[in-house]
Image (cartoon, rainbow, N blue to C red; front, side, top):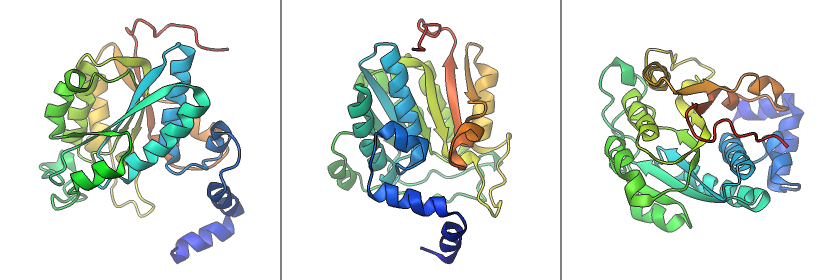
Length: 265
């Protein structure tokens, strides 16, 4: 642990309590999720609420996806979270991880933020990762191609949560085309965009005309009956202060046959 994290933990005692709670995970997942106890809380939030929506709609199985697997840490966390959520909510969860595996694509043009990314990063050991993943399936190849064949090759359950961690504008724009391929989805799909929040040093300076934010903006401009929107007040209404709620969006499929189904208890 570096000196900054030690100082932060001392200045914010709740972090120490949550670290201990994470080591000894007592209580239901829904309670621990409210206090950001599970690792990768943004994934836990998305998977849990996708499963809750599916249960309200009496859908027994959903799919959750990670775009940008790299070394596989996120997908491994997703497997652990999916097991807990499935056990608590009673909805089966399929997991898929999309990655090119050959390394980071060349970040061409200002929209892809070449001042942040390098093409020498991110090569995956596919066979090693397959052995490490008990249930998740890897979808290997250029995302602009794999999203087109995903439905026919994998026949996924309705998609409820997606993490977009492809970094580049072009790759994210290609991944968002999944929503236009005829894949079955829930009427509202929770989406987490990893590369729209800047570091404390403000080195990235993300904006609406580059990167993932541009991909989101263009998606909304070109889709009349599907829109990506933030959950208003999510950060303010959670018990724990964190940055990730600002990176949560929801894909609203207004013409989905079950968009208007009543879901409240």
